[in-house]
Image (cartoon, rainbow, N blue to C red; front, side, top):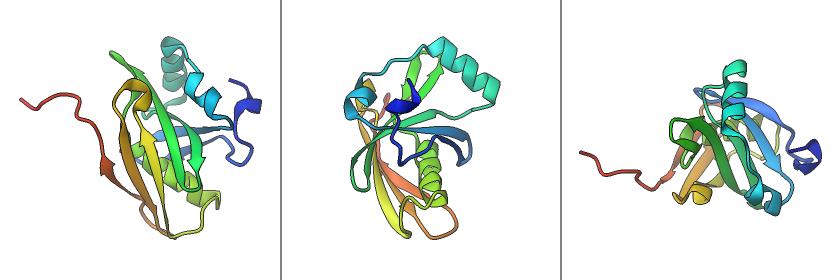
Length: 143
């Protein structure tokens, strides 16, 4: 992935919401949908940088609505299907860079690329905590 594939209005940054999440926003939906990454190399980069959360990649669907892929190569998964911490970090990123007028709500779709679609609402107040709510697909029945 090159800098030219990223959206010029959303600069790459690392944002915090309980964990550090690099934020990358793609310019084109087709690139966002088709990119692949090496899980071992991503894990090594995350460990070297101290990123315990996901690497959050997004594509703007429409004003205030985004699709997200959250790279998290641990164990048997490579993408986390519903990541509240990443959604909160993205909300903080949007507010910090004045990319939204607060208060506002943005919608983040996650998990469709791994067959577990979720929709998270990210409420961004003018100051203070970002609030994330929404629905996710259960991974397994509780025992």
